[in-house]
Image 1 (spheres, one colour):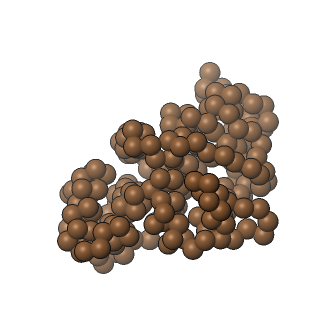
Image 2 (cartoon, one colour):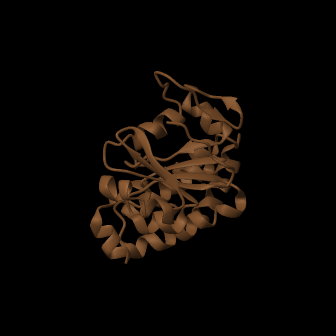
Image 3 (cartoon, rainbow, N blue to C red):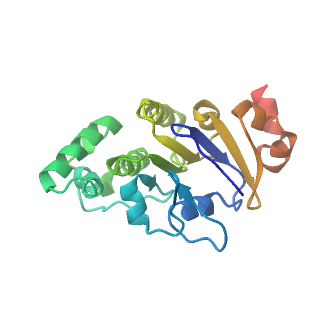
Length: 221
């Protein structure tokens, strides 16, 4: 596959399980491919160590959240902030700003292990934001959330637009894909099946047959 992103673009990636979505993220974020290359801001970064990519602004989240459970929410975020803040006090101050931004003030001084699923999702995003991303890869950030929990998180993602952060997100919640994406890319069996605006992609019969199903068209109608 071949993919080019524009600065500030929101690209949604959809496709059936096993299509290659998370593998694509892993390769972009530092896993060396057998063939091909990855360029970030015009520089070849193929196989570069993930910590160096993160410091450069290429940041990813993971579908399975693994915070430091015994550490506070604040300190979990401060660990990431240390990538750009040399002193502990500065890292904690930056982390406190992000805690407020993602709506985790209630749990700021609580161990991360007590967070509910929605809180863990916000913590995963907060740690990514602490790395000052220019390209942010989000792996199913809505998974496991009920509709009332998704809306505030979608609003939080929209707030990134004025900052010019490029966001690529894997998602199965089609309402979020439709609401957030400038373009949607459909992966199927490791290849690009379709790419275009949300309306174009969801009207593509190949996408309906491979992933969405006829019930999506009925529900959409």
